[in-house]
Length: 115
Length: 111
Image (tube, rainbow over all chains, first blue to last red; front, top):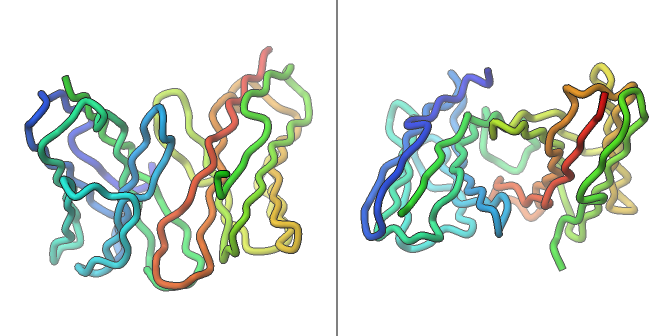
Protein backbone atom coordinates (compact mmCIF):
# COMPACT_ATOMS: atom_id res chain seq x y z
CA UNK A 1 0.00 0.00 0.00
CA UNK A 2 1.60 3.24 -1.22
CA UNK A 3 -0.56 5.49 0.95
CA UNK A 4 -2.01 7.22 -2.11
CA UNK A 5 -5.75 6.72 -2.53
CA UNK A 6 -7.86 7.18 -5.63
CA UNK A 7 -11.61 7.10 -6.10
CA UNK A 8 -13.52 5.69 -7.78
CA UNK A 9 -11.76 2.45 -8.80
CA UNK A 10 -13.94 2.00 -11.85
CA UNK A 11 -16.05 4.44 -13.81
CA UNK A 12 -18.26 3.73 -16.80
CA UNK A 13 -19.83 6.63 -18.61
CA UNK A 14 -21.08 7.70 -22.01
CA UNK A 15 -19.50 9.88 -24.66
CA UNK A 16 -20.01 13.58 -24.11
CA UNK A 17 -20.25 13.25 -20.35
CA UNK A 18 -18.05 14.79 -17.64
CA UNK A 19 -16.39 12.93 -14.78
CA UNK A 20 -14.22 13.80 -11.80
CA UNK A 21 -11.45 11.59 -10.49
CA UNK A 22 -10.16 12.10 -6.98
CA UNK A 23 -6.74 11.55 -5.45
CA UNK A 24 -5.48 11.85 -1.88
CA UNK A 25 -1.68 11.94 -1.62
CA UNK A 26 0.42 10.29 1.06
CA UNK A 27 0.43 12.14 4.33
CA UNK A 28 2.98 14.95 4.11
CA UNK A 29 3.40 14.84 0.34
CA UNK A 30 2.93 18.21 -1.34
CA UNK A 31 3.15 17.17 -5.00
CA UNK A 32 0.46 15.35 -6.94
CA UNK A 33 0.94 14.04 -10.47
CA UNK A 34 -1.69 12.72 -12.86
CA UNK A 35 -0.86 10.09 -15.47
CA UNK A 36 -2.92 8.40 -18.17
CA UNK A 37 -2.27 4.83 -19.32
CA UNK A 38 -3.97 3.76 -22.54
CA UNK A 39 -3.38 0.70 -24.67
CA UNK A 40 -2.03 2.64 -27.63
CA UNK A 41 -0.11 5.47 -25.90
CA UNK A 42 1.19 3.72 -22.79
CA UNK A 43 1.81 5.85 -19.71
CA UNK A 44 1.78 9.60 -20.23
CA UNK A 45 2.28 12.48 -17.82
CA UNK A 46 -0.72 14.81 -17.72
CA UNK A 47 -0.17 17.45 -15.06
CA UNK A 48 1.54 18.17 -11.74
CA UNK A 49 0.41 20.25 -8.79
CA UNK A 50 2.61 21.34 -5.93
CA UNK A 51 1.11 22.73 -2.73
CA UNK A 52 -2.00 23.93 -4.52
CA UNK A 53 -0.31 25.45 -7.56
CA UNK A 54 0.03 24.03 -11.05
CA UNK A 55 3.67 23.09 -11.49
CA UNK A 56 3.96 21.45 -14.89
CA UNK A 57 1.83 20.34 -17.80
CA UNK A 58 2.40 17.33 -19.98
CA UNK A 59 0.14 15.87 -22.65
CA UNK A 60 -3.09 17.07 -21.08
CA UNK A 61 -5.99 17.80 -23.42
CA UNK A 62 -7.86 21.10 -23.19
CA UNK A 63 -10.99 19.10 -22.25
CA UNK A 64 -9.18 17.97 -19.11
CA UNK A 65 -8.42 20.10 -16.07
CA UNK A 66 -7.17 19.52 -12.57
CA UNK A 67 -6.83 21.28 -9.27
CA UNK A 68 -5.27 20.71 -5.88
CA UNK A 69 -7.17 21.80 -2.81
CA UNK A 70 -5.88 23.29 0.48
CA UNK A 71 -6.00 19.84 2.11
CA UNK A 72 -3.72 18.70 -0.78
CA UNK A 73 -6.14 16.28 -2.35
CA UNK A 74 -6.48 16.66 -6.08
CA UNK A 75 -9.22 16.22 -8.65
CA UNK A 76 -8.90 15.55 -12.36
CA UNK A 77 -11.90 16.68 -14.39
CA UNK A 78 -12.51 15.13 -17.79
CA UNK A 79 -15.21 16.65 -19.96
CA UNK A 80 -16.81 16.04 -23.37
CA UNK A 81 -15.59 12.49 -23.06
CA UNK A 82 -14.66 10.52 -26.15
CA UNK A 83 -14.16 6.79 -26.64
CA UNK A 84 -10.42 7.39 -26.82
CA UNK A 85 -10.39 8.73 -23.27
CA UNK A 86 -10.95 5.22 -21.97
CA UNK A 87 -7.84 4.47 -19.94
CA UNK A 88 -6.35 3.91 -16.53
CA UNK A 89 -5.73 7.18 -14.73
CA UNK A 90 -3.05 7.13 -12.06
CA UNK A 91 -2.27 9.67 -9.43
CA UNK A 92 1.15 9.77 -7.77
CA UNK A 93 2.55 11.87 -4.98
CA UNK A 94 5.97 12.92 -3.77
CA UNK A 95 7.34 14.94 -0.90
CA UNK A 96 8.40 17.92 -2.98
CA UNK A 97 8.21 19.25 -6.49
CA UNK A 98 11.38 20.97 -7.46
CA UNK A 99 14.28 19.89 -9.60
CA UNK A 100 15.39 17.33 -7.08
CA UNK A 101 15.07 13.60 -7.43
CA UNK A 102 12.03 12.53 -5.49
CA UNK A 103 10.44 9.12 -5.25
CA UNK A 104 6.91 9.04 -6.65
CA UNK A 105 4.29 6.85 -5.00
CA UNK A 106 1.47 5.66 -7.22
CA UNK A 107 -2.17 5.20 -6.33
CA UNK A 108 -4.15 2.13 -7.44
CA UNK A 109 -5.64 3.96 -10.42
CA UNK A 110 -9.11 4.69 -11.74
CA UNK A 111 -10.23 2.67 -14.74
CA UNK A 112 -12.40 4.86 -16.97
CA UNK A 113 -14.52 3.26 -19.66
CA UNK A 114 -16.32 5.55 -22.10
CA UNK A 115 -19.10 3.85 -24.08
CA UNK B 1 11.93 7.79 -31.92
CA UNK B 2 10.76 7.48 -28.33
CA UNK B 3 12.83 9.23 -25.71
CA UNK B 4 12.85 6.05 -23.62
CA UNK B 5 13.38 2.68 -25.26
CA UNK B 6 13.12 -0.65 -23.47
CA UNK B 7 14.21 -4.11 -24.52
CA UNK B 8 13.04 -6.73 -24.77
CA UNK B 9 9.32 -5.96 -25.16
CA UNK B 10 8.41 -9.48 -24.05
CA UNK B 11 10.43 -12.02 -22.11
CA UNK B 12 9.50 -15.52 -21.02
CA UNK B 13 11.92 -17.42 -18.78
CA UNK B 14 12.05 -20.40 -16.47
CA UNK B 15 11.97 -20.10 -12.72
CA UNK B 16 15.46 -19.53 -11.34
CA UNK B 17 16.87 -17.80 -14.40
CA UNK B 18 18.78 -14.51 -14.23
CA UNK B 19 16.76 -11.79 -15.94
CA UNK B 20 18.00 -8.57 -17.52
CA UNK B 21 15.80 -5.76 -18.83
CA UNK B 22 17.41 -2.83 -20.60
CA UNK B 23 16.46 0.83 -20.88
CA UNK B 24 18.05 3.46 -23.12
CA UNK B 25 17.13 7.12 -23.15
CA UNK B 26 18.00 10.01 -25.42
CA UNK B 27 17.58 13.06 -23.18
CA UNK B 28 19.50 14.47 -20.26
CA UNK B 29 18.02 13.18 -17.05
CA UNK B 30 18.21 13.89 -13.36
CA UNK B 31 16.78 10.52 -12.32
CA UNK B 32 15.62 7.21 -13.72
CA UNK B 33 12.85 5.11 -12.20
CA UNK B 34 12.08 1.42 -12.52
CA UNK B 35 8.43 0.56 -11.93
CA UNK B 36 6.57 -2.73 -11.68
CA UNK B 37 2.98 -3.15 -12.84
CA UNK B 38 1.10 -6.31 -11.97
CA UNK B 39 -1.83 -7.70 -13.99
CA UNK B 40 -4.27 -6.00 -11.61
CA UNK B 41 -2.90 -2.67 -12.84
CA UNK B 42 -1.26 -1.24 -9.72
CA UNK B 43 2.15 0.40 -10.13
CA UNK B 44 4.93 -0.03 -7.60
CA UNK B 45 8.12 1.99 -7.64
CA UNK B 46 11.11 -0.35 -7.44
CA UNK B 47 14.09 1.98 -7.76
CA UNK B 48 15.03 5.59 -8.37
CA UNK B 49 18.57 6.03 -9.68
CA UNK B 50 20.75 8.96 -10.59
CA UNK B 51 24.07 7.11 -10.65
CA UNK B 52 25.69 3.78 -9.92
CA UNK B 53 23.82 0.78 -8.66
CA UNK B 54 21.06 -0.11 -6.20
CA UNK B 55 20.03 -3.48 -4.80
CA UNK B 56 16.84 -4.55 -3.07
CA UNK B 57 16.45 -8.23 -2.34
CA UNK B 58 16.75 -10.11 -5.65
CA UNK B 59 16.48 -6.94 -7.71
CA UNK B 60 19.47 -4.92 -8.90
CA UNK B 61 19.35 -1.73 -10.93
CA UNK B 62 22.30 -0.03 -12.59
CA UNK B 63 22.68 3.15 -14.57
CA UNK B 64 25.43 4.49 -16.84
CA UNK B 65 24.82 8.20 -17.27
CA UNK B 66 27.49 8.63 -19.97
CA UNK B 67 25.99 5.85 -22.11
CA UNK B 68 22.39 6.85 -21.23
CA UNK B 69 21.56 3.29 -20.31
CA UNK B 70 20.09 1.44 -17.36
CA UNK B 71 19.52 -2.22 -16.61
CA UNK B 72 17.22 -4.01 -14.21
CA UNK B 73 18.34 -7.46 -13.12
CA UNK B 74 16.34 -10.12 -11.31
CA UNK B 75 18.29 -12.95 -9.73
CA UNK B 76 16.74 -16.36 -8.99
CA UNK B 77 13.54 -15.36 -10.79
CA UNK B 78 10.21 -16.62 -9.46
CA UNK B 79 6.71 -16.80 -10.99
CA UNK B 80 5.62 -13.97 -8.68
CA UNK B 81 8.08 -11.72 -10.57
CA UNK B 82 5.77 -11.97 -13.59
CA UNK B 83 4.71 -8.41 -14.34
CA UNK B 84 5.32 -5.48 -16.66
CA UNK B 85 8.52 -3.59 -15.83
CA UNK B 86 8.57 0.04 -16.87
CA UNK B 87 11.51 2.39 -17.14
CA UNK B 88 10.79 6.10 -16.67
CA UNK B 89 13.01 9.16 -16.67
CA UNK B 90 12.81 12.60 -15.16
CA UNK B 91 14.35 15.23 -17.42
CA UNK B 92 17.11 17.47 -16.19
CA UNK B 93 15.58 20.64 -17.60
CA UNK B 94 14.30 21.81 -14.27
CA UNK B 95 10.79 22.63 -13.13
CA UNK B 96 8.58 19.85 -14.42
CA UNK B 97 8.76 16.63 -12.47
CA UNK B 98 6.56 14.52 -14.70
CA UNK B 99 8.08 11.27 -15.86
CA UNK B 100 8.57 10.06 -19.44
CA UNK B 101 7.92 6.35 -19.73
CA UNK B 102 9.15 3.46 -21.82
CA UNK B 103 6.58 1.07 -23.25
CA UNK B 104 7.40 -1.60 -20.69
CA UNK B 105 8.77 -5.14 -20.72
CA UNK B 106 6.23 -7.90 -20.21
CA UNK B 107 7.97 -10.60 -18.14
CA UNK B 108 6.57 -14.09 -17.62
CA UNK B 109 8.39 -16.52 -15.33
CA UNK B 110 7.25 -20.09 -15.80
CA UNK B 111 7.47 -22.61 -12.93
